[in-house]
Amino acid sequence: MRLDELADRMGDTITIEWKAFLLRPERAERSLEKFVTYTESWARPASFESSIEFNVWASQDPPPASSVEPHVAAKLIQAQQPDHWHAFHLGLMKAYFTDNRDISNPEVQIAIANTIGADGDALASALVEQGAEMATQVRAEHTEAMEMGVGAAPTVILNQVLPIPGAQDVEAYETWINRILGRS
Image (cartoon, rainbow, N blue to C red; front, side, top):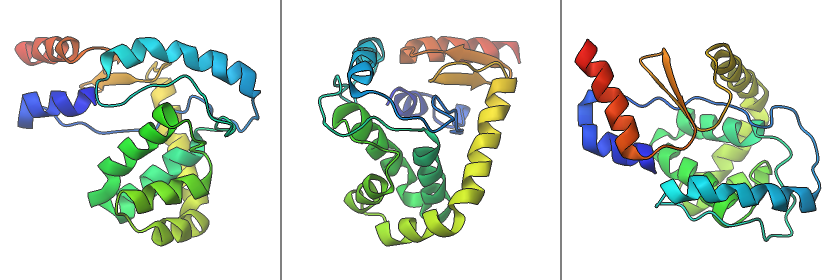
């Protein structure tokens, strides 16, 4: 991912903190036909992202009904199996954008956990036992992002004040960071 490349380039100069932003905060079923048309818009972000293949939705799986569930699963992995968080995050993105799977489905999330070497059974238990509490945290992060003016994913916020919305190349992020560093 671009931010991984940015972190490699800039080393300890930057810290990346991933927060939840919900493109689909409310659960709603969508027509597969309309969703397929929507996924055609993935061409622009795909042009910036060399590590993940973006495919127009070709699966018979329904589109995700909400973005809360995959965020909850990722936060639970991060809290309980932190060494697997990054691979799980990439696994969710691959499942959605490349394999066209419904990542709001807990069975898909557990399968991703198992595939990347995390403990899928532990994730399944955590989803039941702590899912509601983690959903509250995910929604709070979403609200915080909205209050900061975030309206798109991805959005990178530099120094808690400067939002850079939309897919950007690594050089653009580097330029902004260097400008901020030059002012401090």
